[in-house]
Amino acid sequence: MPLRRSPFIFLRHGETECNARGVIAGRTDSPLTETGRNQARMAAERLRHQTWGRVVCGSLSRTLDTAMLAVPGSEPLVTPGLNERDWGELEGRPLARLVSYTDTPPGGEPWAPFERRVTKALNDILDEWDTPLVVAHSGVYRVICRHLFGRPDGPRIANAEPVVIRPGVSGWQLTALACSPRLRPAPPAGDPASSSAPPTVSRRKRPTSGR
Image (cartoon, rainbow, N blue to C red; front, side):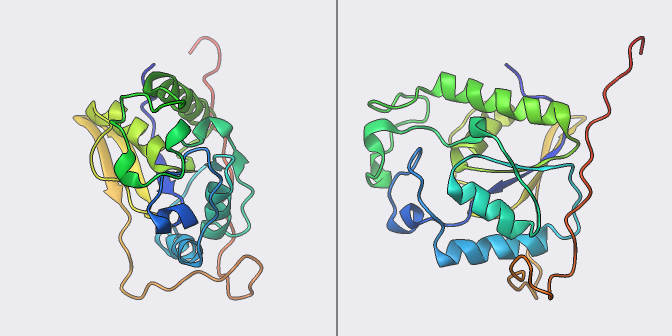
């Protein structure tokens, strides 16, 4: 199943307790650390000049909390198909125990079904919304990379650093949103210092019959 050629913004969740400990967390619902919460607030500044049709995220708390901190006042569309891969018996083990991404971890989710699940979720979102902001996991980003570059391996995407992903004439284009030299954490939702409301939600215009 190919990935729909349509633009979107990707944001990995902020640092979690498992990230800080250097252990594997797929289905494990590891909460954000205070550093992770601040990373999500700083992502709000990087996203300030971007527009998107809808904020979507997985069902684990680390993506939902990141979405709500990065886009204060938003109501993210929770999409379980964007959840991280189930690493089976490797959950909670040191990152050094990770197997190759295309291998099946003992008791875990094989790569092919994981890729199909994530791709279907992304395509359903891209069919419905113009330039959605997708808040998800490093494994989801690896599925995206497999579609864009033919392979899922490579460096892990950093926590809470947004990337704009667009189809181009000669292939896909990835643009990391730069950090402002005066970057400061965004105020929490409800804080009067918050200067902007969430963008207006816009659904994708579906073609009319006969066109």
